[in-house]
Image (cartoon, rainbow over all chains, first blue to last red):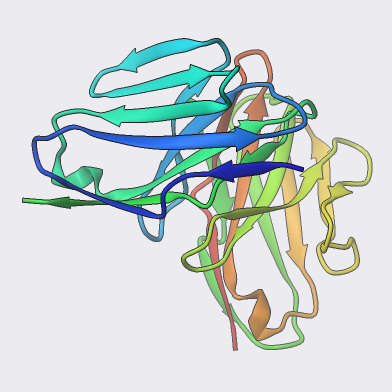
Amino acid sequence: GQNIDQPTEMTATEGAIVQINCTYQTSGFNGLFWYQQHAGEAPTFLSYNVLDGLEEKGRFSSFLSRSKGYSYLLLKELQMKDSASYLCAIMDSNYQLIWGAGTKLIIKP
Amino acid sequence: SAVISQKPSRDICQRGTSLTIQCQVDSQVTMMFWYRQQPGQSLTLIATANQGSEATYESGFVIDKFPISRPNLTFSTLTVSNMSPEDSSIYLCSALWREGNEQFFGPGTRLTVL
């Protein structure tokens, strides 16, 4: 079967660093996506990993280990506007996205 | 990143009526998808919109209820037919550029059925 797990909710402090983990089991793998979604808005593309390793993009970094079925999204220098849901998604062999339930990130001053 | 537009952005409809949502992309894309997102939940794929042929529907979704058209590479429509309050949701159009494996979303259509 296909399964994607990520924590339901996390809390962090403004200015700090937070790591959101995602583990997966899928029948096909064509890459892993991270999206940010603010309440009431459409998801916004953050990152795409298809090879093992770390991809850095400003304050956000995403890591992938295909052998372990594991990824994380790292957010540095947290800002209040980073409060949102973060969605992990796997692209299967048919180029369709399989979605995790999302992690709600709460940033406190 | 590509620009994806949807209209209407929101609508309030009566039970038993139908609503057609339009999705326009500003460049030719490989694939287009339609998703539904219930409040507080993750996205659920309704179907893949295929250019010039019938859409490919996911389990639980049928063409009679959610007819989809995609006449060309940049435009698609989703119709929510014979609506009931359970159809109240956000409907999202998404487009995939296979060359870069980038998938972006439109702003969504917030539908409320009374």
